[in-house]
Length: 389
Image (tube, rainbow, N blue to C red; front, side):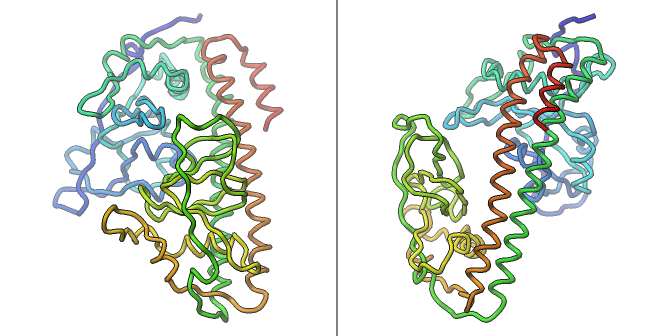
């Protein structure tokens, strides 16, 4: 029998996270702390960027994450990106095992634990995903001192979840989970490909080389202002210093290409397989020598530690003249060309994986509201997922 219940009837435990201390102290333990900004990386198994800090041992029992927990972001968001609070991540054993140390949510997040006798935990998670993707989460948000806050108590009473029989909840979670798991696997494959390509670069520059300056083989050119109000929806990725920040209908630069953060996320380095639009918080790379592939420029810049060259005295940022003056190892003979050929095929594989993920994510986001509302039968969704994967 299908029913509906408010989340207050489903949640058995909810507790805020912590931030701990940067350095070890007596009575503290080393923990990994998952922030809202880490959710996407953690889902795909990329755990290296999650902060490790020291949390007071007496606070750990109430903050430790367990399998089948949900972490809900309750403060933060980004009005510039149209991103409200209310993002969530499901904590499975694979995530906890990957850290090898205790894991807690950050102070801007909250543990949500549900009654497994009433609702299947991963089904509840997809209920929260549906809430967020349909923008209902924004209805529970308010502003306080410039920070967006998710009104958790109001959410508990106002947000209802459809509860079909447990076997159907499990089947719905399995269908959506299969898509998310495939996306996460693809992300790990793409990460491995990038690691292998970087290893190939390091091997390439370990042999005989000539010493040149960065400015001898490439130029960092300024991006161009493109306010959100002037963007026309299209397929062209718009790059800011934090990565892709939107889409436009016309590129500024033909791809493939390299983008470097100038202001904001200083020294970040991004690759774009397709033509792109770098905005004025970035540089883009123009190659000066025909024998230097763009892929070589990407890995050369990625391995230079540009993120610590925040040296513009007037306004913090990356000074391109300083980058142009850096020494660069340029392998002799055919090594650079061979490296470019090798990595180009790797990048093509990576791009195909990302394209598949885009298709899978679109399918998941199409199925999500229909499955959660009961509009679509599970068997029909299973067939669609089987065809896609």
